[in-house]
Image (tube, rainbow, N blue to C red; front, side, top):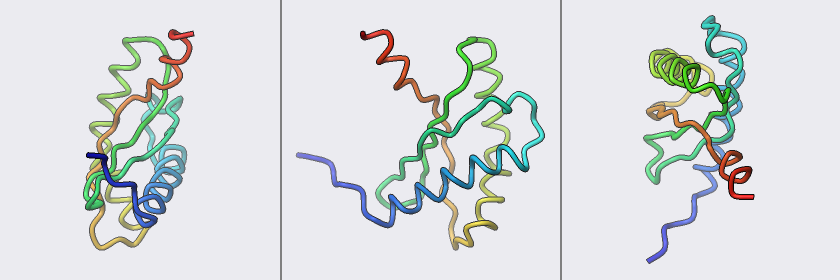
Amino acid sequence: MRGEAPSRRSIRLADLIQRDLAMLLVEEIQDPRLEMVTISGVKMNSDLTIANVLYTCTDDPARREEIAASLGKAKGYLRKLLGHRLKLRTVPELRFERDTFLEKIVYAG
C-alpha cells in the first residue's frame, strides 16, 4: 500500500515554514553556532502537527553535534516566532534532522 501524496495545504505550509525559519535563523537567532546552517526542506506529517525540518551544515562532526544541540534548544523559541509570523492557530512541532541527501549522492558516485 502506498503512502498518501501530500496535500496542497501541507506543501504550502511546509514552504512557508521553510522560508520563515530560514529568515528567523538569520534575523532573530543570536547563536553563532547556527550561522552556517541552511534550511533545505520541510516535510509535514498528514495532520500538519509535526514539521520535520531538514538542514545542512558543516562536515565537521563536532560542529554538527553543537548545531544539533543548538537547534534543539532553539526549537521552542522558533516555534513561537513562527506562530506570530504565520498567524496559525496551532503551530506544528518542529523536529530538526540533518539533510544528508548531497552526502549520499557524492559518496554513492
